[in-house]
Length: 141
Image (cartoon, rainbow, N blue to C red; front, side, top):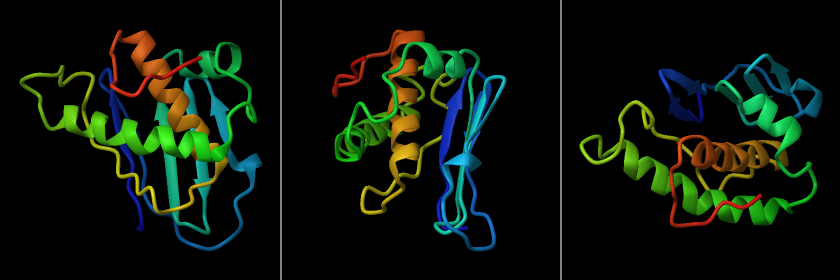
């Protein structure tokens, strides 16, 4: 296991763990089933699963289409949003522990590819809108 991603949501979670084997990332491995979005990249040995009611609908109806933002833009946003989110996870007396369950292990020095950065950024947009949370880095759409 190289990287673990964790995002907690309303008693549901995002769980990431390494997968075995090698292979190139194929965007067709990204699945969307009900309110579960799964992205896997065997060459980097990670998997991210987002289980959040309404997120899939948000991605398909409200979020800007893939390609609207550059990968560099998304990486820069995630570079600031992830630490702020993780800081809230570590402060359960200040921030709702039912919203902020688990930290996200995101290394800005690793190229996760467009799809992961796109979905992670849009998760923050969805999260901030759906739960009325404000981050210091504005999330637009």
